[in-house]
Image 1 (tube, rainbow, N blue to C red):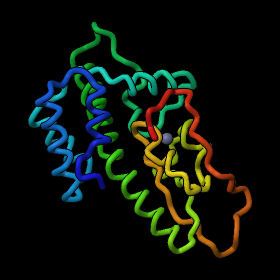
Image 2 (image 1 turned 135 degrees about the vertical axis):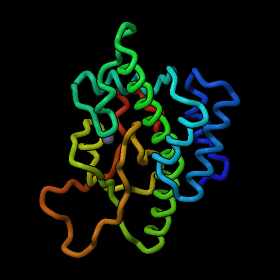
Image 3 (image 1 turned 30 degrees about the vertical axis):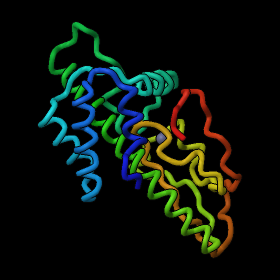
Image 4 (image 1 turned 90 degrees about the vertical axis):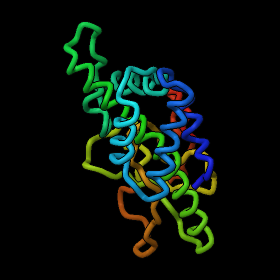
Length: 203
Ligand SMILES: [Zn+2]
């Protein structure tokens, strides 16, 4: 794991609506929670306590929101974020939207640090032992237009495109069980560059 948390710092710097001091508070809380193995819910609770929710601009969010809205297929954590409430929407609707958006941001920041770091470490371990690895979707089976096509793709040595692929992504990279060879219906093509329709900065 990157001690500097610079992936999260870069992602957070691309948002507007938090002061420099507030971004530092978020990063410090992220470090604290992550280093003691805490979950995003702990981080979210701590950020809410210290900063509260507010409207903020997050271009990465806007791009993905537009992309998912196009096919009206939203991955987990986006359920409450399908439609940006109108300015005249009831306050509780706007509040709950900005809270869920903050939750998604914090989940993204934590994933950028933990999922990628764990994946790189795992891939290095696998490579030493000659074990192949693949992308594995996690979660409740909710469809994801980004990750579904990547599920079970073998991850070759290129470390470019690793999960998380988008905010809310829960994909992992797992070892491919060697016994029995390739299961029918499984694609074992090498992972090519992730589609960039949404202009993801992931990677
Ligand atoms: Zn996904």
